[in-house]
Length: 253
Image (cartoon, rainbow, N blue to C red; front, side, top):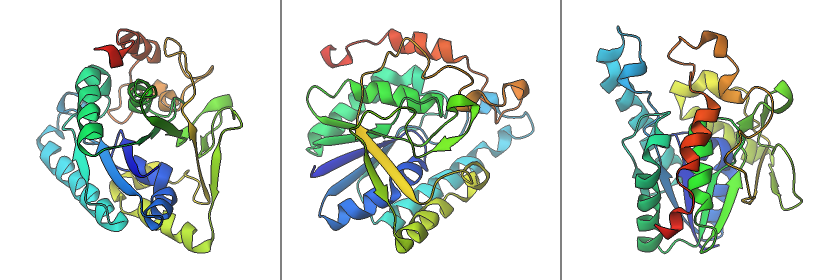
C-alpha cells in the first residue's frame, strides 16, 4: 500500500471515514490521492424554487470546503467531478473510466471506497464501481454510517468478516478527527452522529448489488415521510439497484 486513491462520493466522506487513516498513512510515507465523485450539492431541479438562484453560492461553499480539507490533510493530488449529489448512478461509466485514468496516471495500487451499507445512494453506487477494480488492485471499503436494525451506527460495518482493520484513536487523534469534520461547516448538522474515536476498513466484500444493502429502512430513507423536502432523498433504493445491475463487469468494457 504505497499509492492510495480515496473515493469520496461527496466532499466530507474522506473526513467521516478516513481522517486518522490519512494522517497515519501520510506519516508512513504513502501517497494519497482523493477523487471527489460529486460536488456535494443537489441539482437545481431538486431545490426549493426560491433557492435555485443560490445554486452557485452553495457550490462555491462546498468547493471552498474541499480546498480547506485538502489543506488540512496536506494533500495536493485530487480530482473532482462536477456531478450533483444523488446523480452518481447516472454517471457510472463516466466515473469508472475516470478512475481507470487516475489509477494509470498516478500508479495507484490501493483504492478505498465507502461500504455498501445504505448510508447514501452515492456511497452504494461508488462501492459497486470500485468493486470492478478488485481483480487488478487492492480494493478496501470503509464504513461511514448506516441504519441497520433501525438504529444509526457509524464507523462500524453491518456485519464483520474478521478481515477488519480497526483504528482506535488516542486523544490527539480524536481532536484531529473533530477538526477534520469541522472543516465541513455546511454539513455540521449531518455529522453530529459520527464516531470520533475510531475508523474501520477491510478488503471489499462480495455484495449482491441486485439487492438493497440490508433489510429495514436504509439510512438515507429514514425521513421518507418528508420525501417532498429537498434535503430528503426521495429515490427508491430498489431502482438504484436496477441501475447498478445494468453495469455488470465494467472491467471488460
